[in-house]
Image 1 (cartoon, rainbow, N blue to C red):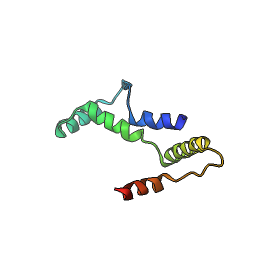
Image 2: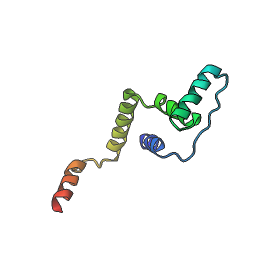
Image 3: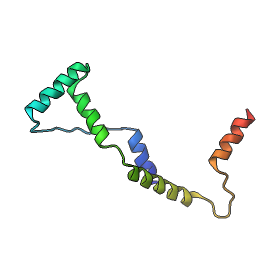
Image 4: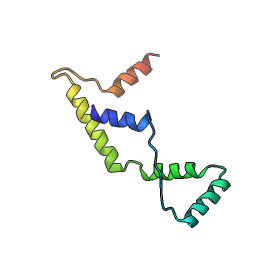
Length: 97
């Protein structure tokens, strides 16, 4: 269930970390302040968005999570029991309405 915990951690932020950045170039900081004023937001919000973009999962990382989740799902299957794919169950439920 490690993969599921990782996915949930990406979706639910139970606690947020903090980051303090030192030695930011004065010119860079002033441009960021001007950009924040122009966008009617805060420097912190712009920095947070930049960090969010930089920390996004790569395609390879996403695929690794999917493979890990698939492996965990395989462990839960009952040997010899017929497994109906989820999409079939969803379609049957939708058709019953």
